[in-house]
Amino acid sequence: MENYEKTLRKLVIDLFNVNAVKFGEFKTKVGILTPVYCDLRVVVSYPNILRVLSDLIEEKTKNIRYDLICGVPYTALPIATALSLKIDKPMVMRRKEKKDYGTKKLIEGDFNDGDRCLIVEDVVTSGGSVLETCQDLQNSGIKVSEAVVLLNREQGGETILKENGINMIALLTLSQLILVLKEENLINEDVYKKVLKYIKENQIKTKHEMNRLKLSYSERIKYCKNPVSKELFKIMDAKKSNLCVAADLTNATDILNLAEEIGPFICLLKLHVDIIEDFHENFIKRLQEIASTHNFLLFEDRKFSDIGKTVQNQYTKGIYHISNWATLITAHSLMGNGTLRAIEQSMSPNKKSGVFLLAESSTEGLINPEYTKATIEMGKTHIETVTGFVCQSPKFLDEPQFIQLTPGVQINESADDCDQRYTSPEAAINEKGADVVVVGRGITKSNDFGKIAEKYRRLLWESYQNRISIE
Figure 1: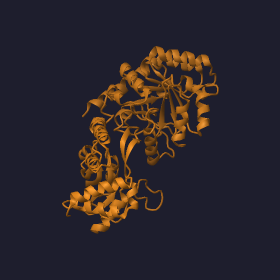
Figure 2: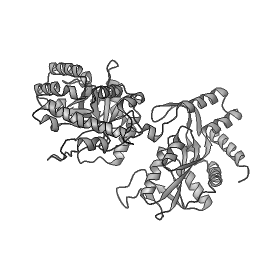
Figure 3: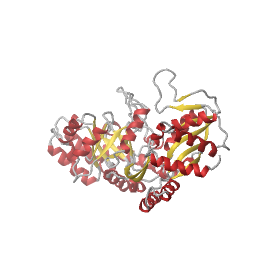
Figure 4: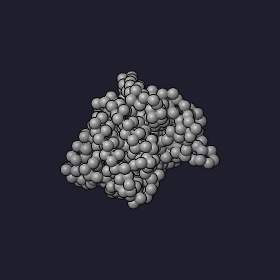
């Protein structure tokens, strides 16, 4: 292709002119402020830009052998389509969600096992979307080792993709893009320097560096945005305990006696306050004293899920006044961001508070992988409120600020007549990815609460130490 650099330069100017590159102050989905935002969805309305992109990609990938093209949904789909039409090479399409009818395929199109696919993406920051697409393609028997992207934001995505066996080819880096815009007097020197500074100071750690399963609790504190997450990690580290006990008892005195005996061995005490038959304010006051003495947090497993005002009333009012004493609560994502916003508006500025979102369950039900993924994505948009997620499998591995809470654990694996599925302490930590493990009847039905709680604490802590030490 003649005048490749000249064409690339004109592309940058065109992208700026159609408002695909914006400067100001924008919040990313993980809550970080960025001075530049690249919204390439707009190019679908500009055939001339799509044609130029296909020309540039053809030139950039002319030495790569591949049989198929796949655009990362959704922004890169028109770019991939333009390339497919230009070079007359077949395209496959990845669905973001599997259909629950028909063929139920994630990859649509005509392909054969062993076909080599070129991934097309618009912008790469961490490389997460590319990796998700690669995984689904590979699960369908398609080989993937190359990805071409329009813009590399230079924040670590290229390294992360390389660690996962994907070679990334970029038409542009963010540094190149803003240099062209500065030279064309479309941005001033201050904006140029501000973006360069942002790139330098906002590097994403690689998957290995950020894998929460390999980091100690104390190391993960620095990543936390929610103050309760920090406090919980400190308690766990100081007490050498990642044990949460579910005090699902109906008598206040029984709960207080249990708390006194197990207090030295736990980091959290989980309640269902609405099942306590003789609830009274003095009970809460005494429970808070025990929690302070033995350094553990109180956790109300309310699983909030309703319209905003109702959630606020459930959290702050009634006879329980949960917001006054529960440092942690649980919530569903079913009603969307409104539930979290309602809780946030009701939190006292003078009290540390956090939320565990229910992403998976230890019982059979309607929760599916799409629901789990959506729940975790929702949590990432509320990083100052969400402490972590209730999960039964390793999730958000590159998000060490979040804590995985895993219930349904007993020393003897089994299932009860209410469809509760249990797993062992060792499996919960090493196979399911738990950071904090919830034990209920395995302790509350025993004859010696303290002795059994100490046994669970020891087994769980040893499993955690093995997890972070094994390479």
